Length: 325
Length: 218
Image (cartoon, rainbow over all chains, first blue to last red; front, top):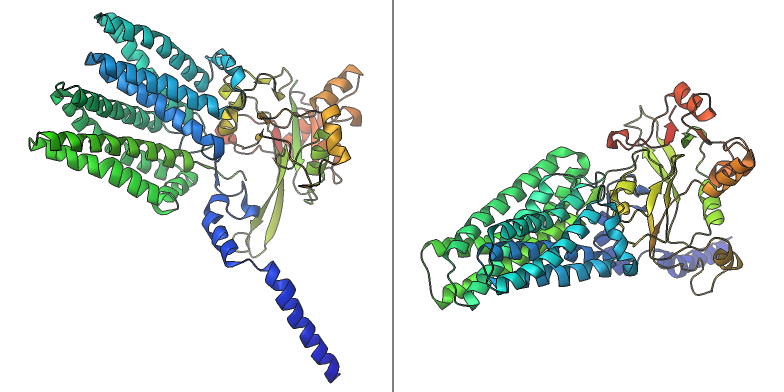
């Protein structure tokens, strides 16, 4: 029996070394599992726990994130340029919205050759409405740029274009707010936050254009001083509303503030997107002028756009579906 | 007429037969599923000292007020008169908005038909897909209630839910008869009687989508 014990011991050691060691996860596998556990949960918890949406933020889904950002930003730039009669700004806004934003949307779709069909459900679908508004914006906006370049500035045309710009700058938020399975998206504050962010980004870009062309910037400064704290306020109210709305909403906000998205939120949105622009614009109250101030305004513009883009990323990435059962 | 299903959860043993038959019938690649089998574990502290595991077979709910139909920008997703929510894949642009809008997450985007056994080529069964049920890629797919069987059956004077030839594959493949299929608008149909007798409920009625899939929890 003693000899057999020895053989069994050796056999057990062999099994432990050669087989069990392969079954046990390596430190790298463990790290990956830990890293992604909050995203997929445990496999058996799929759809029975909070399930993150992935189709609109991972892989080709990143294009829709960029498309929603760029179309709204372009509309924001066009809106401010319209009222400041800046043809360069208008053209820039048109370019950002139509050329870059639409290109991203096309890259996101699986069958771009069927894009013309997108206008067919204007009555129901927010994507369809958005596509129609952007198409309208692309045609009328381009004509208005030519008209404005020729010296025209008829008030009614301006008003019509302003309405189109505002509608374009709000549709992306409406697209998200329609999805009632995700409490983080399904709130009226998403369109509001997106529109304010788009207008703020638009004002920042127009300010940069004015600085480059040596045009007066004082009145645009006032708009930006108003829009930054307003955006911050909307973000705070939005997060609070979602937090108190439902358990899935609370989980989404928790993920944004304390989970894997917290680094994007605190660094991208709070520090770069809000604190730095707020600091720069509070200096502007002190009457700081000259090349240094203009450089700071450029920094503020870049920070603002980064903050807006990161905020949209956090909202799109942080969308949790409510558990199904 | 509005087709619907009732799941009697006490009968479900979680064998996955419905899922397997759906995969076989629709020649689905490994990346997508038309129906899933979810499991929920209820701890003893939540259930009076007794641990329970429950199985929930889930699929497209073919909602009366389908969010996906509203969301689809091209009209690719539409609802038939009998309540079945369908996708016309030739119209789908693959924007995936319907997937975002469906609160039940019951839609799948098919990028490519990958092999069931990676690196070993398609099996004979996978090769048959192109002939019998070609799946379009870069579009969204979902359960269609085996509409072709229903239509063919009705044409031949059969009753879906009662005659095997006219009933969805998952229903006839269930070994424990968990799933009952029938007309929700007919108060005398088996599904309507089951719903009334056991107070069956759909998943998340608060979404207001009026799903056509009901669950009996006893």
